[in-house]
Length: 193
Image 1 (cartoon, rainbow, N blue to C red):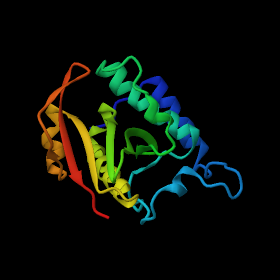
Image 2: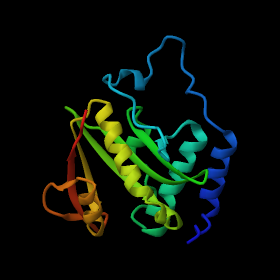
Image 3: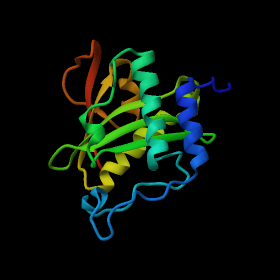
């Protein structure tokens, strides 16, 4: 099955990210610590042969937001705008999933407290779902949080997706309840370090 075409905004953001090539590390004052440097030491998140990576540069971040907007605002109508304060927090990781050079998937993760991390905004464009990118994004998020000292990760999962998460090692963590008018199941997974 071939991928369906992406909406214009998503396609444009993805094209811009591809055209920019690998992004240079973010500019910061010489010798000044960056937010990434303040995280607990640990092995780097997995990168070899993975179609997933932390968004590198403004073009990839724009593509990340465009995919989220397409899925959560346009398709599911969960939000008028799915961005929130976590998107401006330097500790938040905005992850992209790439298929055939185009950014077609996202997940966002951020530390809460005491080794606890939250994963959310998992989104894959419909035409790219045949590539099993969602599972790779979830695994990348779990590994990334564990590599940064996390001990447990939480997520609010739309009820129809609970089995998918269970197959990836997640467990139900409380009773399901409505979030933005859609039933969500709290789930958790221990993080390997």
